[in-house]
Image (tube, rainbow over all chains, first blue to last red; front, side):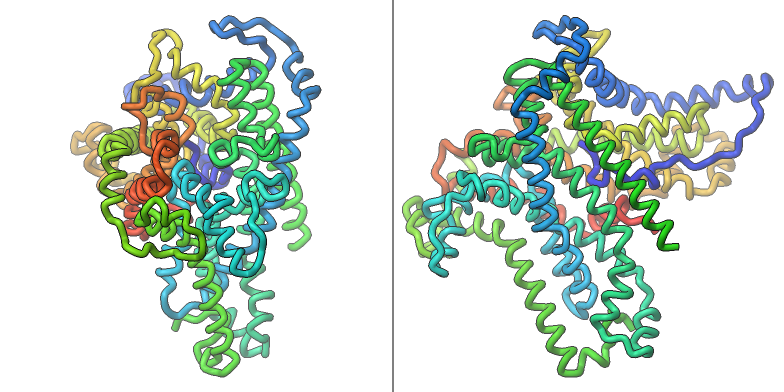
Length: 318
Length: 289
């Protein structure tokens, strides 16, 4: 439901306005206009209240409650959180998340940068590459997993057939403890790298050509021009993309849910999947909410750390 | 002239040519990876049910069986699934844009008291992952407070939550802020009310950004899985993304592939035809000028 670039607070920040002193006479004149203003805001206020603000508050509230199936809730203090910390699944799910994030950065973090730098250099066919890399991002995960599970199929799956040409033995991609995570991350990377590459590419288009010309006149080799002009231009976007990629991976649900259902064992169980299982299969909404609140806190702490580090780094650079 | 870190003159030297060739090859290899699942689904859908498991690297079918696509179309009841998806996503996109445009217009031009606080409230939803409040969202849909109506198994249970999109509101507000206030004032002098201003001034001037947001919303909502999966339990009302996965296993793999490929086409066609708008949309949030 959220837009892909969920953390762009600077775009979203309200503009500062000049405050006017409020007078009673102004207020009376302003009343009809204020009514109209709120009338136009009403649909958004109502839907946000019902389907975002209230659920957010409820989620926090329910994490301190024992919620019964009929909807009656009793205060449970920190019971849910204590239970969660003692639950062996807690460590497993978050460790899986960390491994997913590492795999995803390893497989997918630098590829879009390389793509953007190379496509920027193309004199023909830029548009072609842009579309081709972008197409996987519009595919619904629920459809792509049907295709991917056949690509990964142990007998007759095309991946094993390709590897067989090089004499590599058949692998049980989604059933093997060591392979399930990277196999899943490969699907997620396929589905996501195009967006990131396009964002880098758009950023690279802003580099002024005079900079490259000046560097060339000063005798910088093409490789030095990448290192000293293109890459530094991308650093701010790259650091933002780092955060967005980790945040997206931590929330991942559909791919592991449909492709491996958390297996083999609990190798691909993610916190989001556990929230789903606890709330909708085991009907323990209070306990599931404790996990939700933990997820909000983890992501919040992560983005605060990012902000502080980023500010320190940019302060040092100046 | 357009140049990158290589100048056009350098590209004509042997080193430049070598570099350019390597770059093209690298990009083409990545393009093959990117397109392979589409190609694989299309051609696997054309094989017969024994050929598909024959082993070896036969990517293309011996005899393309186009009738598989016809069979998958009827067996998977594609017309109904597509119809459901288009209805859910189409109305969802229109409602989201209407609600967001009205809110952005109010925040930008009508100066409501407390507008800053309301904006902060909208912004808050961008900072909290939706999966984290998914459980109470579901209970709200199952039983709306005060009126006690359940929206389960109703498309309103999707359409209303789909209206919540702070990203659209802020993009539109930024855009509306750039429309000169004089236009609004002169319309007011001419006796236009706020609705007239929105319908006849603001919206016609922001047609391009509205198309960008509509394309983004279409692709985003078409991909949604968890919410329709839980809200719509009646198979006859489910969108293609939910239903296809659950009936796929009942049919042979070649039909699964044919059905999957057909299911990919609408967002694919939109992305290709409206790539200009998608490109603008993707870079709206990611890059700050």
